[in-house]
Every structure is written in structure tokens, then in C-alpha cells.
Length: 128
Image 1 (cartoon, rainbow, N blue to C red):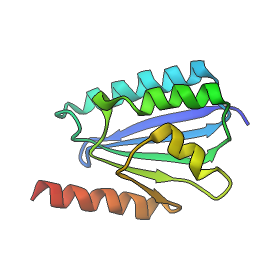
Image 2 (image 1 turned 180 degrees about the vertical axis):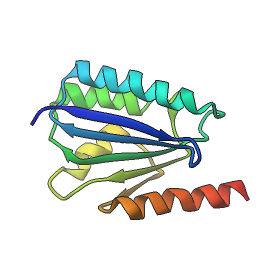
Image 3 (image 1 turned 135 degrees about the vertical axis):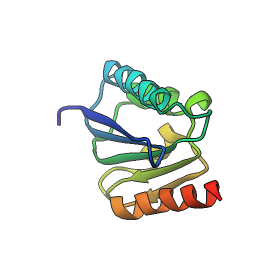
Image 4 (image 1 turned 90 degrees about the vertical axis):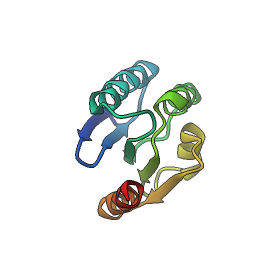
């Protein structure tokens, strides 16, 4: 499956919405890192104030080299979010996703609406 990624922001929710699909190479991971950094910076928030939603429900199993590059990208503490919701399906190994995310505060979902509600719930309690 061809590699795809999209990164959208919702400034009102302070949300960075990342969708990864297909089989990546390291060059694609580098592009995701560049686009992700730009999205986070465009929100104009203090460090770690944004929320992140990552949809890997159409993500293929990846090579070890790509997993290592993803670890470097998503493990960068400078761009860590306050909360992280991951949407996945049963075909992708949760262990592989855990290896590249390495986040204690990530929550796993199989429904986008539930994931967004969980993130927004944190938004309302964080603002109070």
C-alpha cells in the first residue's frame, strides 16, 4: 500500500490531527516530521500545550529502519503533546505502534469520535 500522510490543525481545540497510511520509507518519515513540526509551530502555543490525534488505522507493518525513524520523530520531547490519542484497528500490531510512540500518556481508540471526545475533555478540564 502506498504511503500517505496528512496533518491538519484545529486551532480552537489546540489539536494536531495526523493520519498515517500505507508502507513508509525513511524519507517519508522525515517529511512527516517536518510537516508535524510546522503544524505544531503554527498553533503558536507554549510547549506541550497542544493535543495530538494520530490515526494509524490504515498504517502497514513497518521495517525496523522506519520504526526507528518514527521513534525519533514522535519521541522528540520538544514537540510532545499534553495528551495523545491513537486510533488503530486490530490488524496493526499495537506493540509496533507502542515502540515508535513510547508515550505513557497515550490512549488507544478504535473510534475517532471517542478519541476526539477524550482529547477535548482534557481541554475543558485543563482550561478550568
